[in-house]
Length: 118
Image (cartoon, rainbow, N blue to C red; front, side):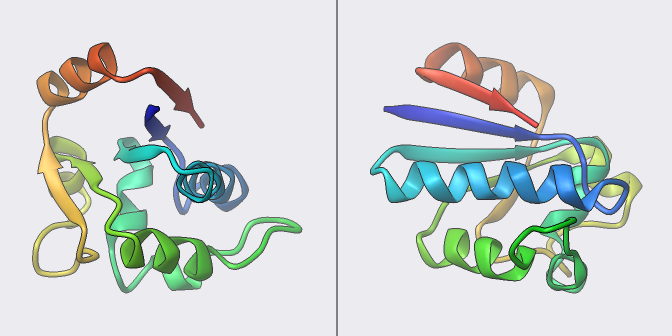
């Protein structure tokens, strides 16, 4: 099954951000084809200097889950406007990240089997 995991929280709510990343990890572990869409403050999760520092309340470290996604080559789509506005881009993002725009996101959501939002 194709799954889009949409994450809207980052440094502003590490618990919610971690839940989204853990959902992506669980979907990959279950054998689904996953793409992660980061928008708003969530784009900070694509910054390789930021995500290792985040820890949600009673959550496993964000670093472990993001490293799992990178290791499994899960595409991480960074909202281009949000990323540029927060200085998150090719100079500091994780290896599977790329800029996408809202048109890319809408087209993808309309083509996947499920969109799960955090």
